[in-house]
Amino acid sequence: MTSSHPVRPAFVPESGAGTVVELPDLAVSLGSWRPALVASDLDGTLLTSDGVVSPRTRAAIDACRAAGIPVVGVTGRGPRLLDSVRAALGGTGIAVLAQGGYVVDLDRTEVLRTVGMSNEDATAVIGAIEGVAGELIVAVEDAAEQAEALRPLRVQHGFDWPYPEPAHLLPRHEVLPVGAVLKVFLRSARHGEDELLRLARDVVDPAVAELTHAGLGFIEVLPPGVTKATGLAVALEHHGVDLGRVLVFGDMPNDLPMIQAVTAAGGRAVAMANAHPEVLAAAADRTSGSDADGVARYLEAVLALGSAGV
Image (tube, rainbow, N blue to C red; front, side, top):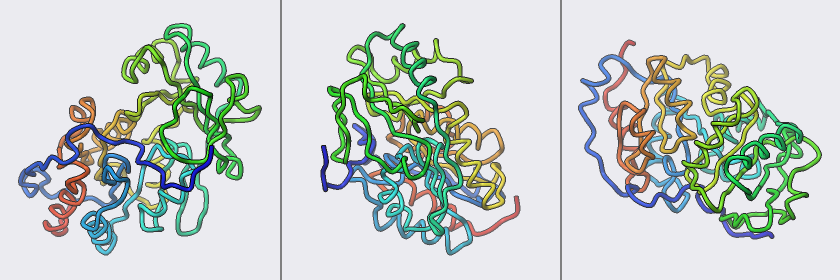
């Protein structure tokens, strides 16, 4: 299956994307704190439901960078979608892809991190989850090596992959490659993503694999230690910025690790109006939905405060 059509946004929120939220007085809530770096999820957060960066959001990103504040994109999109991520970020800066498993410097086209999971471990994890959730349908992002990571997705017949992008449609026994995988997608005909994730976490040790979902109807299996928080850490090391100086935006459970890490370090986390309930509960602040320039509205308000000591 191949297509030249644009890739659909990875998360199209059902409600809340157009909601406008009145921001609190940030001069009061932030006090003297100011961000040294902005980290944002893409789909359902920085991007509209059409999968684009609005002119207002683009202007806010540019204003941050002009003020010396790097903007890092942190997404579940894999390396096969690197061009779309590059376009969203204006072709510059650090991009964290594959839920943290693939980090690239867009200015130098240099891969800073790539992490894979062996065929054996992926097979064992799938088997363990099927033991409690029943038969699953599988798709795979192939390999940790950069050259292989650019290959099309490997999708089992019946997965109903929702995006018009290059993919190999395969029978189940051929979906997993012989070598490493970047991540595995699991869909159930019986369980939604929240329930499937709960069942999977009951039987999979985090030392073996990380599990998450991005609100797409399926869960993701990642190499151990791969989260948006650990991927963001690579970008922070590159920029020499501490977690406590980060302003982070997100909307789905796959954003929780970086939201929690930033919050614990004294940084600031903002949930979109269209966010998953767990994200709304975890973030200190809320902004307008992704179709109402929520990220831009918050950044504009922060930049209007000017600089201050921390």
